[in-house]
Length: 487
Image 1 (cartoon, one colour):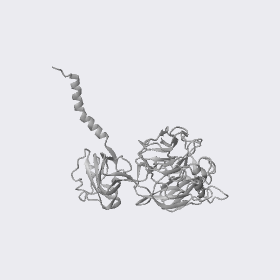
Image 2 (cartoon, rainbow, N blue to C red):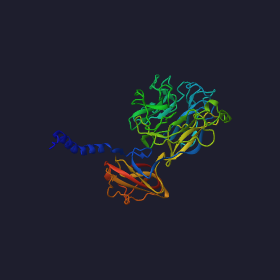
Image 3 (cartoon, one colour):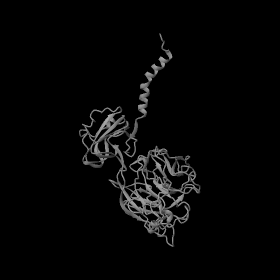
C-alpha cells in the first residue's frame, strides 16, 4: 500500500486553508478607490468588460480663426503655444518668429494674448519691451536667446505659493538646459536662477510642466529621442520636483503596446474638471511623408524646406507615472481639406484645454504654418467629450471593475438618441445585483446632459454604499457615456 507523504499532505492542507485568504487579499488589492473624482471614459482604467459597446474618440469641431499671427515680430513661424484659465480671463503665450533660422536666436520673442470668454482674443499693448522703435506690442520676453524659442508658462496650482511665483515657466534648448522663470502677474518675468533646473534632455520642442494635485509634485514632460542624442524617434521623457528647482532623473515615457512614432510635442496637462487625468495632444510628425510638391507649397507662400513632411494631432492620456495610454491611435485632429495644412510642422495644438461655456470646452491649433496666412484656430468639444462609451441601436453593456467611492449620488455626462436609453445597475464586488439598484429599479435615462443624477425608483441616494466595493453596470442603447462622478 502506497503511503501518502505527510509533508506533502501538510502542504496541500495549508494551501487549501490559505487560498481563500490569498484570494481575499488579491480581491482587496484589485478594488480601485475613485473617491469623489470625476472619471472620464478616455481609457480602460475603470472598464472590466464591454459587450456590444466600444470606446469611441470624438474629434473636435472648428469654431474658426481666433488669432492672426500678423504683427511684424510674429509671422509665419510662431509656435509652441500655451493656454490656460486664470480667474476672470484666459491667457495665451506663443513664440513670435517671422523668419526661419537656427533654434534659439534673438529673432525669437515670446508674445501674449488674452481673452475674457475664451472666444474673442486680444493682443494688448504691454509697453514692456521696445521693438521697431515702439513699446506698443504684446511681447513679454525679448533678447534672452535661446529662451524665447519655447517659453512655456503655467499657472501654479500648488497651495501657499508666494504671490511673486504664482506663474511659472520653463524654457531652453539642449545647450542651455531648461531654465525656470517666475512671475507675479504673468507678464513681467524673471529667472528663478541663472543656472538651468533641468539639464538631461534634448529639449528641441515645447517642454511643459504643471503642479500635479494627484502626485503632489511638479511634473515636466520634455523632448528626448529614443536612440539618444538626435537618433531614433522624437519622444517624451518626464521628471518631477517638489520645489521646481531640484528635479528627479529623467525617465522615458512608455506607450503600452503602441508602436513608436515621432511625437513632436506632447502638450500634456491636467484636465481642469478631473486633474488626476492628464490630457495630451501630441503632434504626430511624419518625416518624409510628402503630400505637397515644392512648387505647390511655393504657390501658397511657403518655403521649400517645409514642404517635405506632414503632421497631425493625436490624443493620449496619463494617470501619472511614466506611462501614456494610447487608447486611440487614429488622428484626433486631421490636416483637413485643401493643401495648406499638408506641409511640415503645421497642425500643432496649444498646451491646454479651457472651458468656454457650461457645455463646451476649447482647444487651439496652429494652421497654415510657414505661410503668410498662418493663424490660430479654436476647436470645440462638449465638456468631458474627448471620448465615450458608445452603444449602437441594438444595445450593449459595460461593467466596471470593482471600486470604492465617496458620495451621496451618482451623476453622469451622457447623450442618447430619441430612441436611445441608459440604465445603471449597481452590483457588489462579485457582480451580484444589489437589491434596490437593479436595472428594473433604475429610472430610464433619455436625453443629452452634461450632468444628470441617476435615480432608482425616484431615489438618488447611494450613501449607504459609500466606501464599499461595488461595480456599475451601464445598459445602453444608441447612447454615449462620457463621464461619471459621485457627489
